[in-house]
Amino acid sequence: MKSVTNEVQALVGRQLGLRDVRLEDHLVEDLDAVSADIVNIVAALEDLFGIVIEEEALADIRKVDDLCRMVAERIDVQPSGATD
View 1 (cartoon, rainbow, N blue to C red):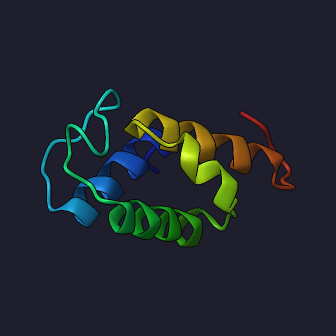
View 2 (view 1 turned 60 degrees about the horizontal axis):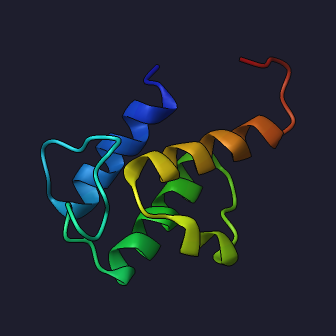
View 3 (view 1 turned 90 degrees about the horizontal axis):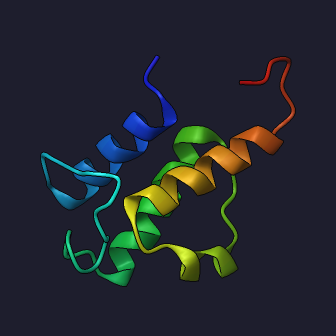
């Protein structure tokens, strides 16, 4: 199974029509995402991982790495039998 980071990078790439997405890429400045793109990416991540990213958290998303951390934090708080 792919890691959270790989899954997030792949999803961002698919949503924005890009091949290479790096963790340090800024969504707006480097990847030319607009706010609607970011909302769509977040919605897709919520569906993919079965999590909720609160609307207030959207303001903190600048880089691909920010998305990875948000997903990882929310997966960690989900009830599960195992931890990483």
